[in-house]
Length: 172
Image 1 (cartoon, one colour):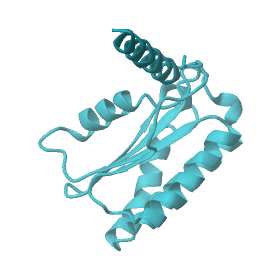
Image 2 (cartoon, rainbow, N blue to C red):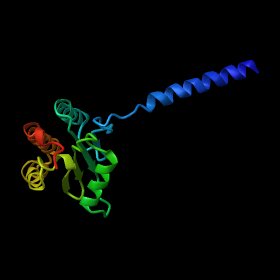
Image 3 (cartoon, helix red, strand yellow):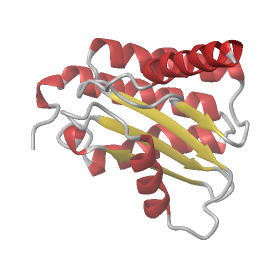
Image 4 (cartoon, one colour):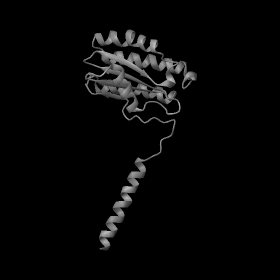
């Protein structure tokens, strides 16, 4: 009986430690995303994902804004707008206080790309700028099957825009 009680005490103590470690309170300035590149199509190599991750993390470290890239095989009948918004909301990109997340969403077989911009970046990456980046950086590279290069060019340009205009982050 004593062994059972001791075992139960150790078990519940261990569980409470694990739970308390996993339930760390989120700082309003922190982001909640775990994978900043989700490629369900294996379009990118591990090295390419790693290189993009480094670029994205550099922006996050320097400014705080966050970029994620999600590549899906197909939209499965959903509109590009609906799909990118749903994924952006699920990922909870950007800092809560500034709402400064940005999603580059690719539907590979549908040949569609969208840059979904959080409210806190709308003064920096306006719709016409997002369309220009897709039209000038992403689409030409994708047509040559240079997917990494297109995404890398987009991340670099977006990062530079955010860095140059960081005083506008979170402004209505």
